[in-house]
Image (cartoon, rainbow, N blue to C red; front, side, top):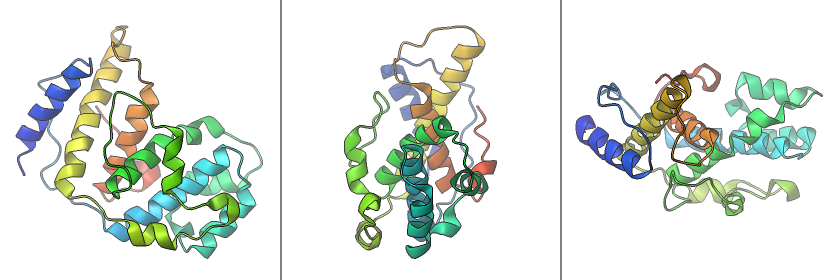
Length: 207
């Protein structure tokens, strides 16, 4: 896999989107490996339930659903705490709908992933009907993980865009793009997770 070529394409696309580029930004590691599809599917369903709760779905029902669908073990520690506490810190988890978007694209449910806009409300249609206690069997059966090269390419672009966001903040520069920062960051988080072995809560999104 030509990571330098991938970076050149990322920089070209970043420019088109109105972001500054850094020609000295390190390339992604050349020993990247994609997690098994079962893990990606399980993690996406766990995150889906958490995001649903951040939009006021009942937490106890979400836990029951996760247990029944046998994906509760894919929750992160912070998500377990969130689902079992009374106080709501919903903003953090609401923003992770963009991580769901990255998962939906990576599993073949979404045809393309564009960084010039946030995901729309149609995203939820690709996931099980948790509000009506729907099964995840069809979702699991239809999932088809994209190639590692495709996921790495999109992750590399997200990395470049994230650097531009951090750099703009550090230098008090306004970005030309009006896309909310969490769109880039949460998509990158999901993509990075698929390409590493770290726990979700321990991912370091360095730039």
